Structure formats: C-alpha cells, structure tokens
Image 1 (cartoon, helix red, strand yellow):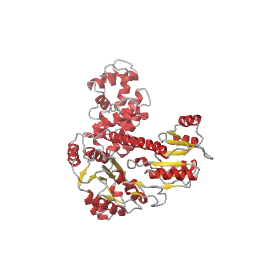
Image 2 (cartoon, one colour):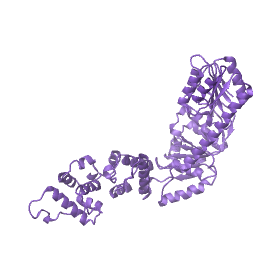
Image 3 (cartoon, rainbow, N blue to C red):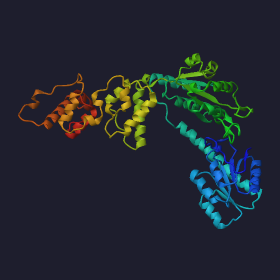
Image 4 (cartoon, one colour):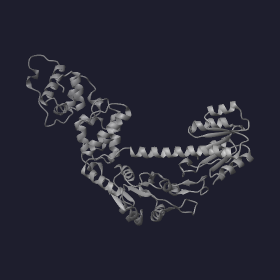
Length: 511
C-alpha cells in the first residue's frame, strides 16, 4: 500500500496506467486541501485495499497525471486556486474515460447538476458515511475491472484477427507445419532470420495456436530499451527503488503471466541483464527492483534475433548458457527472396491493404513490375515489400503500377540498371506528340521482339507525324494480338506509356 501526502506530485519518467495491474487493485487520487479530511480518506480507502495517492491541491494532482493515470480521481469541490470543477474539466480533456468523484460540503442541486454536466462519475455530499464512500468507490472498481477485461479481450481478438502469415511456397508450408507442432509443446522458442522476415507474426502464431492462447501476448524490443531501465522494464520495481520510482510497477514478465513474452532482438540485451534473464528462465521466478520477494510467473518465452548468436558467443557478447536455454525449439524464418511466387502473393495483398487504407481502387501490377519483384533481392524482406507497395499505391494515378513507379531507393539498390522505361514519368510523357514517343524509342534498349515499321507506312504521299504514330501503334498492337504489354516491349516503351498513347488515339482495337 502506498500513501503520498503533503501535496507532493509523482514525477515518473514515463506514463503508466495502473488499471493494467492485477485485477481488484484500483489506484486512487484523493485531492483535498484540508489535511485532516485527506488523511481520513486515505486511511479508509487504504484499509479497503486500494492504492492511494493524496494531494493537497488540484495543480499537484494534475502534475502527477504526467506519470500515473489512476482508476479514479476523488476530489473536493471547493478548493483555493483551482476548484474541483476546473480539475474535472482538465482531467476529462486529457483522459475522457477517467472517472471523477466530487465531494462538497456545499451540496446543492445546481452544483450537482453542474458536476454531472461536466462529466463527473458520481457526487458525494459532506458529511458522508464511511460505508457510502466505500460503496461509491467499489462501484468504480467493478466498472474498472469490466473495462480492463473488455480491453484485454479486444486486444486478443485484434491480435488474432490481425495480419495472417501468407505463403504458399514449399519453405513456408514447412514452416507452418513446424509452428503447428511447436505451438502444442512446452519449452521456449528461438526465432532466427533476417530483419523484416516477420518474426513477430510467427511468435503470435505460436501463442494463439498454443495452450496459452487465452493469456496475454507481450512483445518487448530489447534494442529499444535504455540499458539503465531494462531491468525495471522486464522485472518491475517497487516504490522508492530508484529516483522517480513513485509507485510500484509490474514488469513485462508479470504482465505476460499465463501467456507469452516475445523478446525481439535478444542479441541486443546487455550481458549483466542476460545473467538475470537466465536465472528467471531456470526457476520462473522474478524479483522486482528494490524487492527481495520472488514472484512466480508462468510464461513462455519466444526470443527472436537477426544476428548470428553463435558468432556473438565467440565474441563474448552473448552468453552460451542463455543461448541453449532459449533454444529449446528453434525456427528459421526464410528470407523473402527464397520464397518464390510468395512475393507476388504478398505484393498483391499489400497493394490491396494500402488501397483500402487510402480509400482508392487497387491498381493492377504490370507484368514487368512482377518480373522485377521476383528477381529483386529484398534486403529488407517482407517489411520492405510492404512499404514499397504502400508508397507506390499512395502515388498511383489509377494506371497499372510499373517499373517507373518503383521508389527511388529501390531503383538505386537494384543490382543491374533498370530499363529506361522505368525513368520518372515526367521525362517520358512530357509531350503529347510523336516526338516524346520517339524519345522513348530512342532511349530504350530494343528487345528481340521489336519490329521494323513497314516500308509502306510512308507510301502514298504526304502524311502527318500524328498519322505515323497512330499507324505505328496500331501495327504493334495488331502484331501482338492485342497484348499491350507485348506491344509496348516491341516498341521499346513502357506499358504505362503504351496505355496513354492508345487512349490518346482512341484505338478501338484495345482489348
């Protein structure tokens, strides 16, 4: 039980929500400028099992909200400098769902109505009985418990209904079979693979296909936690354990109790913390910073790395015993370049998702783009493909996406020069006449399928450049059997340019 009095405000370095703590434990803010009244409230509510933070002014309570978000604010109405109604308004502006219970010795119908209109959860008139206070606060605790349970269920349903692992290639089918087997077994899991291959999706699949599916899935990026806060982040801390530790906090292990803890980028964990993690994995007991009381946790660890851990062991930056403890089951996540036609499957899925998010029709993917994607190395793997498709769809104009739509960063990273038809549209379609089309042809590498215009094209007397271009397009389309992609290749221009020219001349032979 913690009691903070004298108007001192908490100042933790990061905001936490005590409503995520174990069920039945509600954190309360008591705000009253009268010391005696404040102490009575703290004693009553502490005896009921609540965690109470008391403040002598509304300003102190507001400052404390930067570090701790309680489950209930219990405040006096009449206070100097800032009264309860103003505190209520500011609390509701920052946290609309945070219940506020107002107390006043000057109760009247008008003040009660004003409080309710401002969003007060309830209203107490002084003097009130202890049982009345306890009953009102208990109502908030019951409501808070229901809210937390609903939030947990929504998170779980959202995670289960989130992005599925897509893949029809042989390597992915093999991975799916391993996931299904390992999900039903005990033991921690080590996921290995390049960055961006979808290791967190695999971790979620293991969790929701296993016996702990009803428990929480808690992800932690080990590389993103400052070294000085890593122990507290994982194992929690007690109030007063260090500067700014103004209240107790459950660590990620406790939060994942009954479920799965996903430790991403485990190779980035500092050596001293590796030793403490090893001890927890051995006996499944955690000790919060500042406490000597061990707490048992039932949790499955799924760790992930994009580094060569045996090489790190040889370097002395990763513990060999921790590696073997984590590596009860090991899964290798294949790189995207090794997944064959999964690339096309994923590209189409990401395109559809991006188009839906932007509220626009999903553009087609031109054959030359699909050919490029199949041959591209994808150093960023699935994550790179997803971002690539999102950028391309966002800038699309409704026409099929082609090589010219690839992001500049991808073009720069391509191991071989892209055809000049993939140059920015402004350099290809700057003009409307045959001169711009001629520029396309002159700057392109003519393929084996290119053709020579019939000699009869210029026979029969004077002819305009407009007619020459139209007849050339008609001839290319006729020879390709109506296949615009093949016709574009034969002319040495891009598919998008071909579509633009065909529409410009209103060629009715376009299939």
